[in-house]
Image (tube, rainbow, N blue to C red; front, side):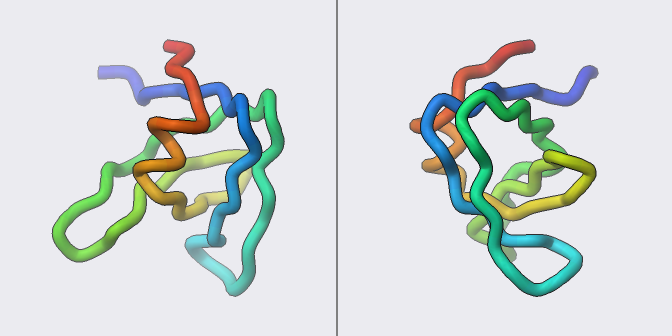
Length: 68
């Protein structure tokens, strides 16, 4: 199974998974979903710009489109 890829159409705020801080993911960025949220975390883990980030599942569904 291939990882799900998404194109951002409205900027998203992400939290770095491995370091402290936030970043803004711009329109046009391609995100690769690494892990879905689970019972322990309210976030989806995505890769973008060589970083692993946490974003809200709602942002993924409302601010991106799947691009295969």
